[in-house]
Image 1 (cartoon, one colour):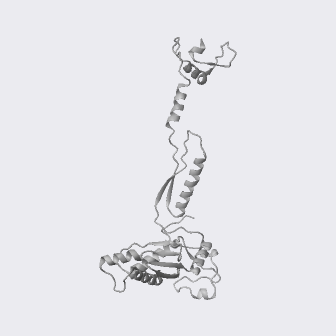
Image 2 (tube, one colour):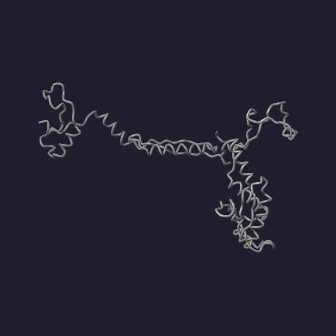
Length: 282
């Protein structure tokens, strides 16, 4: 499934929807097209789903704007490890900004009052029943999630699968694998290929346009040497002048690297190859 961020809902095929019966059909909107007898109705489902943290943060933003309009304090919601599932930590910063601006409401005397006001506004803005409880504790708001809402969310995932979060569609370029074609491959290339392709698939699932890049460069020197060898055909002839290469190490290098087949007219029978170094051909 590839997600398109511009599409917020799609209609499920009729054969995937349960038939509409009794009370369910009587609650249908008058403007909706009438379904034929016995035919199931199409169901609109999401193509994206916000995370729980994003949902809690959106409610906290709406509550802050409702309780303290015009105060540009950043909303800070984090996962709680002690009291509640989440914690809104905005009250302290919000109290400081209200005090500095000189627009402190008469009922606000301390950060605790800001937290209590935020908690009440958060309950009002929670139209989906996400919160079981949101209560002030000092300068913070502890939040507990509703068990029934969590169960409904899990059931929605079971019915429609895991959905990506809503996001703005962008173009991503992922450079991965990129083996050097002039060298041996190893397990590091396999690791990079798997991780890189996984990232590409996750971005595509979220609705982004992905371009995969597999750079196989860094082969200029190696292939230049091969092309040079093909053009020359063999090593250049050694210097025929006596004692032109007196270095014994140089002679041994020739013995190892520059062996050539004997011509057909040669009378030498062993070994089957001979060294091309002038010191060894005399």
